[in-house]
Length: 78
Image (cartoon, rainbow, N blue to C red; front, side, top):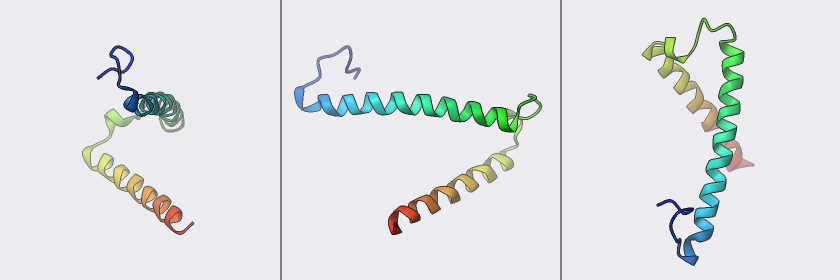
């Protein structure tokens, strides 16, 4: 359902507004973060995700999950 094209019932409007703001913010932040990462890790174009092996990608995912776990724990305890 596209809330901008269809009439959204009053009780759902705030949820759809929240979704629209959240997606807009995510898209901008994701674009900025990814672009910065490309500049940091592949500034000359010789590297990049498309050149990573499956094993390298899985290792990177595991590292990201570990970082996320510690952020969750710090919030739990903080």
